[in-house]
Image (cartoon, rainbow, N blue to C red; front, side):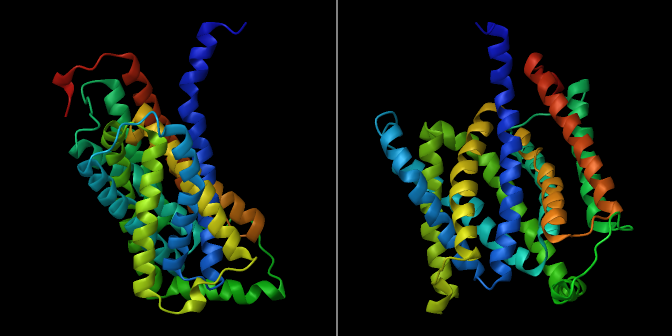
Length: 345
């Protein structure tokens, strides 16, 4: 028989394992989304299909597993879910895809490292998170966020020399040249700011999940409703901005694979895991795992696309991991020590 303490320790590790899994999923999302946009799929149509796929995937589970457990939701709660879905999912995903179209998968993953800082500040503003500056655990959280921010700045501002070699084939020359053209233009800067704006709305979504779970009473039902509302909103946005019928056609190609992956795995599975983890550990805990997506994306980009790895990315990534450790250490200590609100900022 497994000792009780071992079962308890295993239970405590579940959120950590879930967040590692989510970041692997998000690394795949960045790569698949970039591929779909590069082969000509409209970004608004992509988001609409993605959210519709997630809704179709989750709806049967929510209906059969939760219909007898959850009380009837009031109009006020549904209205809150609708607006949180619009700002946190519909707006975030559409802005993200536009920014991704102008930049690269690696840069998109790098900019997501602003999510922990934005989430931390918003959580303080909404009084979801607290900082006890007179305690070592509170100081560790502040230092961790600052170190993460420093790592993200290094990645964004310092490229450095390449650490690996990439031998171009004739078929790759045009692709690399096109990326260089994009990187040297104003679209690259515009895309970076769009990605940061998308991260800000996503951070707001993370912070607002806790109160919504309490109002809704079910993680699965809340995730399904948000996917449903965002799919309807995204469809209206796509219909308003993209009138060509050809843009809505899907074949047995990378576009369909990308939609299926982002809809079922990213939105359907990872959103539910994130809502569950936010309920257990809070939004800042979840956001602090975001830097891992950059490292995973860089590794897969190197293996699959032979993308160069630069010194700045390695140094910045190391700082991100150190900052993540500081914050998680502070969070773990807070769970064991009673909170003294006289220390709270």
